[in-house]
Length: 518
Image 1 (cartoon, rainbow, N blue to C red):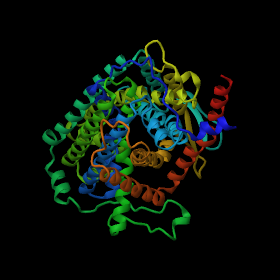
Image 2 (image 1 turned 45 degrees about the vertical axis):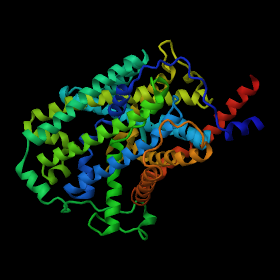
Image 3 (image 1 turned 60 degrees about the horizontal axis):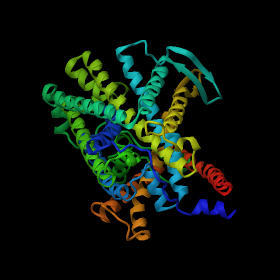
Image 4 (image 1 turned 180 degrees about the horizontal axis):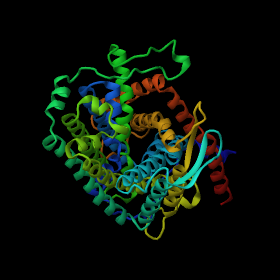
């Protein structure tokens, strides 16, 4: 029993990370950050943000606030990255700041939903836009029609799903051939999609510049139009929390911008992924922190310029009501006509391919670190002959494929059955939990300065303690709004996280028993 208690409560010392190939330089690390952040969100979420904020100024302010939050978080994480330059990144930071349990809960949620669900969503997005060029890649071209597993869930295989799975298999195989190949693919596709995004900005601002749209958007910069009301997220809150809009005074303004941050923060997420690969960075104590800082600054600048470009091309009402929320496609269609949809499809295909390569490359390193601590399948804690966690990549790929195959099932009052994507619901659920882990990690800077005041810190958090505190306060404020107005998608995320507690207890006891036998 004493061994089990020790496994649960004592910090775990990172094991030697022999076998990794240190091949990632500063440029490569920055490309991992940029490539993992830019997926398909920047081309879509502007529609929902303008519906929440109701103005052109609100759209740009939302992205500026997201940029400030993201950059401040990256600048703060740099201290932890330099202090613990090991495979696993944020898992290691939480483990060392608090306990192995908190590290595991993050790693568990990352594997179960955060990383894998994002990869699944990006893979299906890749297939969806490939379907613009090749219509046979359709979500209703069934190989295996939906089979009901219960009243709420089903499993199916369409051509679109198959293409998404094949993308996962292909990128997993490539990344099993070594980090040098993985980083080469990342550098090529990140460079290509950065140029594509710059091209979109240039076209919209200089070629497709629409005088009527500019007059509408910038002439009425803060005028609230078409803003959606925010209703309490649960019935028991309806007597306590008011229904508001962005024009309902200070609280309505606060609530609208808090909810609007969901789309922009999610589109700007994954900047921390380079920390997962620290054992493969040539100079991790310097370059992981710099990669986070440079990468987030590049992406946030591009995102703000892209949204400025949309406002130069489309009136606010067209942004709010873009078909399927495809704002970038609508912008290019306004410039090039029907050919704009095909041009945008090519850009998003490039973007999603590069995004998933970075996410697949980085995510497996967390499973590896957990396994090295006896908290995941033992085989995932080994490296293959190419110096990468091949088994962890395979396990990750299998679970992503399962998420793509599983569907949500809804029956209308008329008896009509519709199908959604399970990963989409799961990602909605964990947005709140992701913020909790970010807050805990940045708070860990204060904890570790108290616990290890004399530790070697090659980089110290920029603006400490004010910038880390600013992030914590702002993120907690956003979480407060989400609890009130997105209740139905916040509490399930907490359930997913805390389901990891019994799993942790089981794995830690098995690990302690194995050590006792040895």
